[in-house]
Image (cartoon, rainbow, N blue to C red; front, side, top):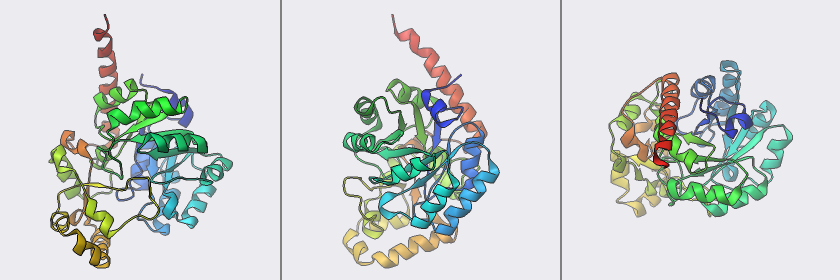
Length: 322
């Protein structure tokens, strides 16, 4: 049985967390993960207040298990955050910025707080803020991340913030990766790209197939996106997404100065294609794990597979000790 202290803390069965991806999030996906024993999550970045509130309401109808709601401190949707506090989810998570007093507010309604970081210094600050769990995300991730790899970052964060549980993120797509994260001292894992390639994910099939057909080196850092849609107040928190190649990115990555001048028009293009159900026309967000993902699976099958693979990998470990 795969169980870590994170399971007891969050009230979940397996130490697998759904990354709260703003560009690929839904109550249905969150509930599917929670119903299979993991921690599902609803994202808020780049979303309307109405959509966030709808997902908070819906996920509570679709599961009676614990879930998380994520917010970005420096571009906080105050109304959506207040609605989150009223919903009192088991976990309120933050990313890309120092949550400051938001930690206290979350604790006051009885929610645990999880914060994603990309450096040891950010992890130490998070511990000082009193967060309950820290997600250490390496540069392999598809979401906004830094330059330090998961393999290097996770054990350093574990050492720096002990005894606070650490969740590993970035570069994990199967049970071998989960087992490796546990050996590095993590209490669980946070998966994004692997969950995009599931039947329940609210992503067009073109996006999912692009992931299953990609190589790891195809997941490039979309630096030009920061020229078009820069996130405010992220000093010290690297803000670079990874994406698979698209005609849009390939064109504008070579014309970054022009992209800054055309920022409003290009941002409208990204938003309009997303609203039209074709986000893959401009961006195909994915981490380097895309190279190892070959099948689009139901969430239930995926989590069972991940657990079985992790247990098998851990059972092999003793053979290396004389």
